[in-house]
Structure formats: C-alpha cells, structure tokens
Image 1 (cartoon, rainbow, N blue to C red):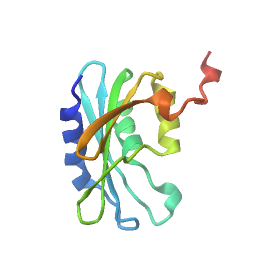
Image 2: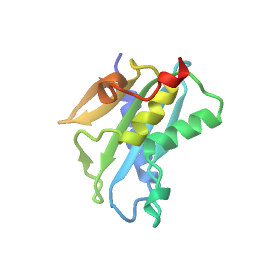
Image 3: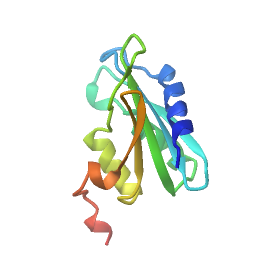
Image 4: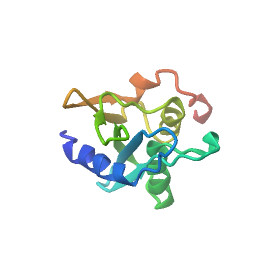
Amino acid sequence: MDYTFLMEKAKEVIKNSYSPYSGFSVGAALLTGDGRIFCGCNIENASFGATICAERSAFAAAISDGAKNFEALAVVGADKNGVLKDGVMPCGICRQVMAEFCDGDFKIIVYGNGKIKTVLLSELLPSAFTDFRK
C-alpha cells in the first residue's frame, strides 16, 4: 500500500509542534483499520519528563475517540528551520506504547533520502513487553 497520503498528514501537523527546548518538531499520523487518521505532534515541557512525543499524542487522540484497530503510523521530523530530517524513528517509549495496542506487523512509515520507507513494529521492538497479555 502507498502511504504517501499518511506521510503528508504527518508533515502537515509539524506546524503544531511545541518544541522550544529542542528546536526539533515531530509530526505523526496514525491510520486506523477503518480508514480514520489521527494526528499528533510533540509537545515539550520545561520539566522534560512531561514532554509527549508526536506518536503518543496521535495514539492518545485515537484511543480517546474510541479507536482500537491500528494499521500504520507515519512519523516525520524537522529542525528549527523546517528542514525535514531523514530517518526519524519512534523512541523506545513510543515503541512500547505501540506494542500495547498493535501487533508486530503494525507498519511505521518514515521519511528518508527523499523516499518513504516502511518498517514493522516487530523490527523496531523485537522483544516487546507484551507477554503479560497472553
């Protein structure tokens, strides 16, 4: 499947990022199994532990709206000048949150070298802490 449309949504939401400390804006667009898209951006905080990543922001919006089935997530980052950065991947906390709600075949769409690349959650987090659900 071509996820260009999802990457474009992630790029659009970068403008909403609140990142005065790092100067690094991140946008995410989460596609549900029924075709809805939920977007999120990073929201930094002076107390760095209170910062929320774009990926978790998108999941929070989706789950708050009742979504439960997820297909793919596009992630894109830009520096303080708005220049897109290659290969921005979800952090470890975001990967674990994805593992809470998605199977290993969940797709993460990233931007790199002017192209869109798809990786599976199982590739990014091969030993996810999910055994307790069995």
